Length: 406
Length: 137
Image (cartoon, rainbow over all chains, first blue to last red; front, side, top):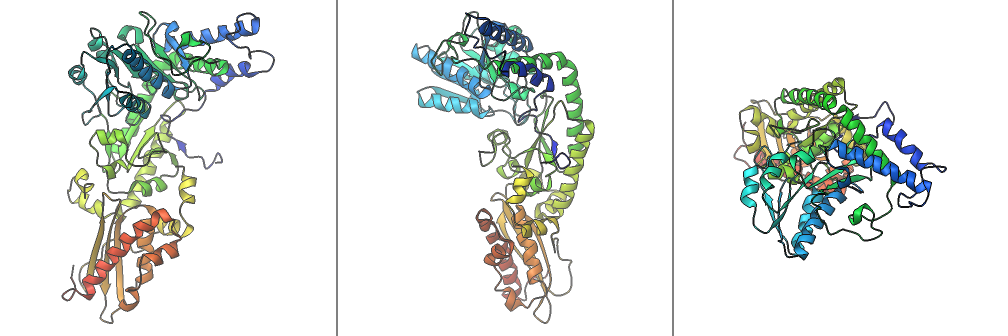
């Protein structure tokens, strides 16, 4: 991929490029002379310097989510954080006979659904809530699903396919009188939307560095330290990270996550506003093309537009949109064939789900790039729609969803 | 899937027909015997409509197609239309999915889809050959 032929990157929800500042912050901790110490080696300066860098990063992570620093547990990413939160909390409760019921939703990330599925095989009961057509879970639905033996509620903040935001602050309020703990997957929202863990009363929160211009391979689970929330760990070893996640800490990765969080917090208000404006431009541009359906409504993350293009086949459109780096169909997991579970849960016919593309914008997206992307989609539709037997019927007034049920 | 990967999974012949499809559209009314054939469903990912106009001399005077499908399906429609236009009916009756697979060097994953193109072609041929004077649309 040379620079001239590089497609316009519109896949920031999949991953983000490393911020140059983050790379600079990480480099000293990978050099031979300094920075290689094991943070657990408190007996010498090498170890103590590394430990200080880790603690500094811990405070930077906590600041981004307005939480206490001693709750931050470093993990390999949001998938591990989700697994540690869900498996850890429910296994701990089940082993002590405190309950075995979990409430989550059909539109959660695969990491959450996968962990819930594992728990089901271990004897837990899982209630997966059905979102409304806009992708939203209502607080009352969670209230109705709660039982005396509910030990965990796991609801994501921003959906990774549609950008739909859930009202996790209201969920936390609902759960305050209930013994169940609240886990929030904030991989997409951290650094893009304000998060106030302490004020809202969230118990467990997952984040990932590479979604916010940090390195891949590092993330964090925030675990409520007071009163101390206990988890059954996923692995056993030297007791690092208060025993929640043993293993020698990857100092350079942690420093990278910390710096990424610092940058994100510093620019949060301005960058979020800029992205919201760009997103509105993108959404409006696509809507003006006519035969398009945008998914999700109401309170949305600032960086994602999920759009279906009826009448044309997803693979044909995908080939035609080669100048754009997008996620197609089942965004987020190219290993998963078939339609997306998120769009299915929102009531979209499978054939329409397969002509769905996720446009996600970020720090280096410009208004010009957004306009170019809209023009590329317009050209592709203009070329492909005349080939489709559905397009004529749509113009004759048949509803788009019905056409996709044939 | 990146575009480079996408392009690698299709042969040059598929890409050429996909980029410049021939005979796409609907036949205008009037003049000659027109047969229309349809096959496939949107839900299965392939839906094809083929129209043929047969002249008095028993040749295919004109062809038109519309398709909802992947690039290989669209290319198979375009290739087939080009292959049969101007040819005598007897010759066209022998054209089928295996010709499309061969001519377009289709990957195994795409072979099933062009069977739908063949079905639509057969249905259109049936309409002109067997139908009560065919159907005039």
